[in-house]
Image 1 (cartoon, rainbow, N blue to C red):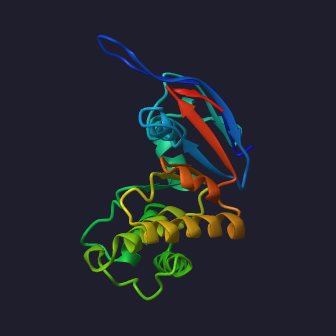
Image 2: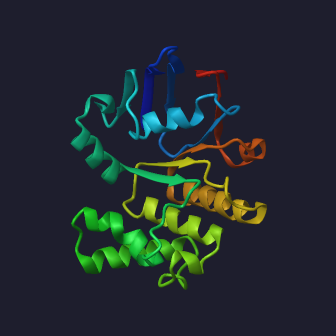
Image 3: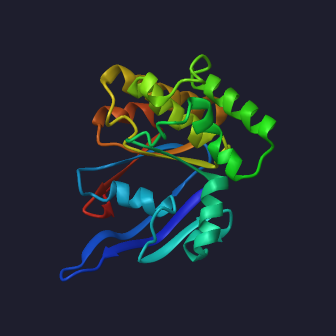
Amino acid sequence: MIIEVKNLKKTYEGRVPTHALKDINFGIKKGEFVALMGRSGSGKSTLLHQIGLLDTPTSGEIIMKDTNLVLLSESKKAEFRLKELGYVFQSYALLPELTALESVYLPLMLLNIDKKEYIRKATEMLEKVGLGERIDHLPKEMSGGEQQRVAIARALVNNPSILFADEPTANLDTESSEVILNLFKKLNKENGQTIIMVTHEPDDKKWVDRVIWLKDGVIEK
């Protein structure tokens, strides 16, 4: 297993505590393309945020590389995210003043990689997602689908062990959504990229190897 989740719980405290995740257990193999699905409020994105180290669970374990990631310090979690994990969200989160190339090589700059090398890697990744001719374009000069492909290239440029995608096609039209999901499938099959994707679209089942269904904070099937 590339990642194992054991007895994971997430409770939001308040006058009436909200039990968003209740004793979640599952594992994902290296090279799997897995969808987290369920109705709105089922806990899909909450679960993704826990296993992607974007939030801290109330209790439980997230095991990766023989380490319980929950126990890492915040600085170690940040380092692990940068080196091992990639993220794509429904909002593209591109800085308006950065070109496609600059957006993609930013994570490599944070890893103190040589300038010539990070430019080469970012260019190659943009070519891989079909944007080789758009590397000098700003977000306002690209369509929503193209901006999302820049975000995917940025997420993959550090060669992450797992790519997390949270509703990556929610803001796209049908044609652009198909392009993005085709790209995920290609990356998964040709590169062996492990992908964990949250989606609310039933038709997206056809793109993935396996679906983990959630309902009211528990795995339904």
